[in-house]
Amino acid sequence: MVADPLSQVFSALADPTRRDIVARLAVADATVGELAAPYDVTVQAVSKHLKVLEDAGLVSRSREAQRRPVHLEAEVFDLMTKWIERYRRQAEERYRRLDDVLRDMPDDVRPDNPSQEGSPP
Amino acid sequence: MVADPLSQVFSALADPTRRDIVARLAVADATVGELAAPYDVTVQAVSKHLKVLEDAGLVSRSREAQRRPVHLEAEVFDLMTKWIERYRRQAEERYRRLDDVLRDMPDDVRPDNPSQEGSPP
DNA sequence: TCCTTTCTCAACCTTTCGGTTGAAAAGGAC
DNA sequence: GTCCTTTTCAACCGAAAGGTTGAGAAAGGA
Image (cartoon, each protein chain N blue to C red):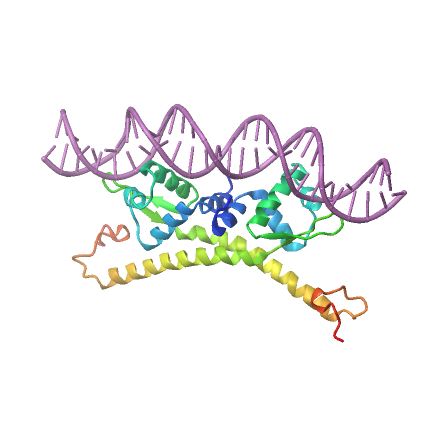
């Protein structure tokens, strides 16, 4: 149960119900009961979902009499976006370099390009 | 096995081995054997991981004799970043509005603010 | 042709996940 | 105090995840 933070966040958001909970918490804080209402599952199941989100650092819970208002902690999103952007940029950089190489390459050594196959008549 | 695209991408990246595979594919395409080499698991296990990544649209596999070079498809990242940014922005917008309300509120109706408690002597 | 390499498929096993029910903890309200 | 509400904890269940081994498909080279 001591998974790395990135795995926790990704797997927390892999569940559609939990993503929906996050979406609703982006609009306003809510209690467990309020959050559970729209779904066709027990309050206990939603309480478990909230524990997963809390362990991932995506939400925090305070206290207000018996109620436990849930609050979205949006900062954790940065963890993911940083990871994603890093590899997206890296992959794009690769394409850029590949384009450069192909452009600078003399025709007689350039590998076949499907989009050029069937030379014009 | 017919999960929605967003769930598939998030859960594909919830596994550290699969994230590592994506990281390495951002540098260069690779065969299944090459990808499996650094890990302490069988090639079959890595082949399964690649199937998960492929089903999520994160990689594609071509053919080259017996080898099946794997290629990163970085466009799918946009799906996630769009989802994340939407709710991050929404949450930030909420804070902005809350700040406005508190600023425009007369002191005698403004709710207690912990950071203001213990009025200066 | 037979052999080797590379990879996937199939069956199985163990652990985790998302759900249930039932009981108990934590706070008001009366 | 006794209720009632809200939430969590504990035990259980079925399905899916991630791993294994063993067999088979696909392609090239001897």
